[in-house]
Image 1 (tube, rainbow, N blue to C red):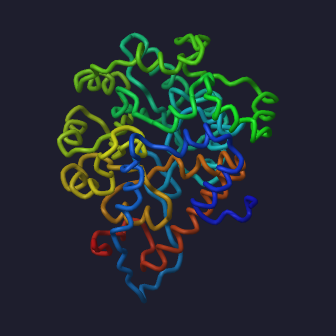
Image 2: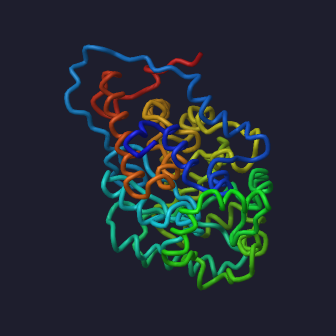
Image 3: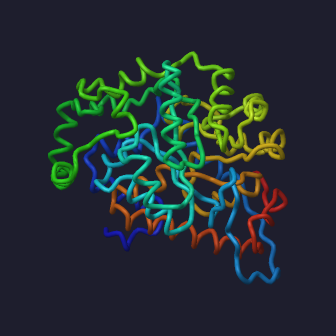
Length: 381
């Protein structure tokens, strides 16, 4: 199977599985505990049906949306994810370039492998910074000031990761940064020598957002130590309200799942919330963002931009979320599998397929613009 034979999410996943060593593929692919939520994120969307209208004279289709003050050419964006150069040596550079080609937003993680500054200088498409809250309040301010100076448009604070999810696939393979593999994990790397050749023949792996703040030379526990020693599990709404004031710009919370929390986000001045369960990687058994979307939109949708991620695999999935009131929809695995499979051409092909699916779906729904989508064109089984 080559890239030109990839026509959907599942094809990219198969190609990524073929090219990545098992421990790295399973890091992308896996979820928490029994992976119930991971599976339900998509199946919940598929219990909802689209009801098209015909003979509406659909000519040109306008996919553009404005979300958190950012104009996007299509209502799907690349959610921030960690460690991208581990999956392909181009990493965030490939994702940012592909997002720029399609005029959509991309995110850079605190655990990103390319610097905020490099990506901001190279591309003028909207860029978000996915931020973790540290015990050291001074460090939080330094990192926010750096993002502001770099020209990042949107601050995205992750609020569902005060402790790591129980990802048992990683425990079985010994996946960690740096690697501390089990025998089976080492065997899997030996089976995919091209990944290793690419890894050692390109620039060394690093985490530039953290270089000045965290000693990552401490062996396999370095990333784990960052979460357990530096991040603050006692973070409260008062802490976040202070961050919102300090940032003084577009600020969203990623990981909101309840109406009460959505309401609090409005009260402290956030401009966006992202309904997300971290792609099923944190609290297994949690409700899916799609199932929560309508009640949260009803509660706060007129006061704050409501976005969702987790489980999106198709253009029709995006159309269903938009019909329920989401302003935009994000994906992680959606572009990580193509990245792992083929670098920038892979991500570009995935985003191109998404754009084509959205345009086709809009025509078949009888809609010329995203604003024409509504709950009238949905039915739940």
